[in-house]
Image 1 (cartoon, rainbow, N blue to C red):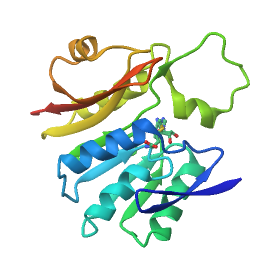
Image 2: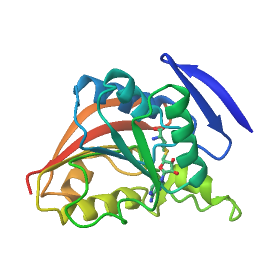
Image 3: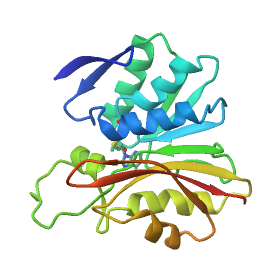
Length: 206
Ligand SMILES: C[S@@+](CC[C@H](N)C(=O)[O-])C[C@H]1O[C@@H](n2cnc3c(N)ncnc32)[C@H](O)[C@@H]1O
């Protein structure tokens, strides 16, 4: 069932198979606005409803934005919300991560609020794929994000990755140690009681 919410001056259609905008979505949106990112060269992985890109597009309607989303319903919803807000500047490809891109054709700024929870051994084995894609990043929780980082590692130009990790998976110090060739900064964090989430900016010179 498609529902409709109004958030930060945006009309957002949601769907039960698609991640609803929440704390992490707004935390990432706010950081990107603060960073005053104003470029055509930006891609979001996993836009869900499109909330993050729509927030950027509202503030900078003269740029175009790219997205890749593994869940077809979410890809369609991002386009629907783009049109509903008269911000027809977002194009979405339904794909797994950045895998369809030719080497060295990936935009220089990459945004990913990934599924960041570890596999729960108690989880219902019949949990639908779309729900796992929203929440579970692998056995340790950060494997989906690591796939993105590996794909970016092969580029021959500088890139910046804005991403989120959770204390239920790993902390920023240990995560940075896994990716020593990247400069990792904590942009902000939020303590949600049962977990802390951090927005990271990771840059790699080339
Ligand atoms: C935590 S939700 C974030 C949604 C939205 N960006 C937000 O902040 O509200 C993660 C999103 O990533 C998508 N996703 C998960 N794995 C993916 C992959 N391998 N490639 C592309 N999208 C993926 C999910 O379908 C989901 O829409």
